Amino acid sequence: MHQLVTAFGEYLHYRAQRQPSTVRRYTAILDKFTEYLEQSLNQHPPDLAHAEVEQLARFLENPLRSGSKQSKTVWNGSLAALRAFYEFLRKKELVADNPARDIDRLKYKADPRISLSLAEIVALAHAAAGESVIYQRRNEALVKTGYFCGLRAAELLGLDVPYIDFVRQKLTWIKGKGGKVRQVSFPKELIPVLEQCILDRSRLGARSDEPAVFVSDRGTRMSIRRYEQLLHDAGERAEISQPVYPHLLRHSIATELAGRGVSVFALQQFLGHESIGATQVYVHLLDGTGPIVDVISQDMAQLETALWLSGATSS
Image (cartoon, rainbow, N blue to C red):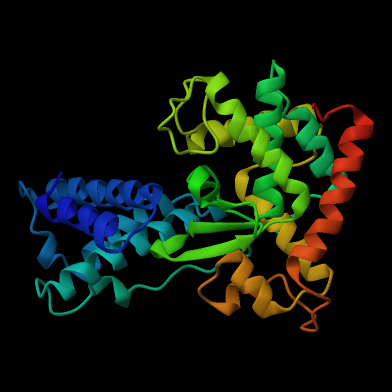
């Protein structure tokens, strides 16, 4: 790996507090850019600090040849990594300007995401049951907490036991994008679900000093890849018509809350959005109906009842 890319990766991780998945994705893109310059310029290693706009553009054009929407997504993702990298170099005074800023993002019409209904959440929680009662309770806790708390996958799996305040019904330390920390309230119906999940960790092999709430069958913190696979498989077993992935749970609760008339500002805080523009995608009415936790509690009670009737909830 080029030394500037290594330095950039360390900056993203330690200073910018970016998610590990973002660090890996950005450095992988920059590794490919480094290889591209090595081949096109016959430089080993290439001079990344003096790359020109035309070289950046030609690198981005490679995956665009198919003209598909996916290739435009790759362009925009790669451009984001290049912009962040050269902004890092500019702040380090290694370049005068950020050449990636002179390249535009590509516009495309995104496919609308269809949120999951409460009935589908019930079916998903039921289908997520594992081979034993222990796995069943853990998997149901993953679905319920991920949905009703509106958490990103990294936030959900990064949840530690000391950061659950059962008295105040709050997750007190949710580390979101950019290292920003927020608190998230949860309904009282989630208390026994989380308490039982914590008690079950030792039966999954977790050591007494393991802080993670959600652990794998090896007793260590569950990986995002395993969580993604768990939801995907549960979605297929539940015969949900679209692929189920972690962000769909977050999208679905946000859509549900917006439909209930929750204030855009309350929803922004709940989701941890830095820009209110990201929240307004969900919100059409700005008149709130009440605290978010009260609205969620109503749905949580419905979910618990439905799960109990279906025989999915284990005591």
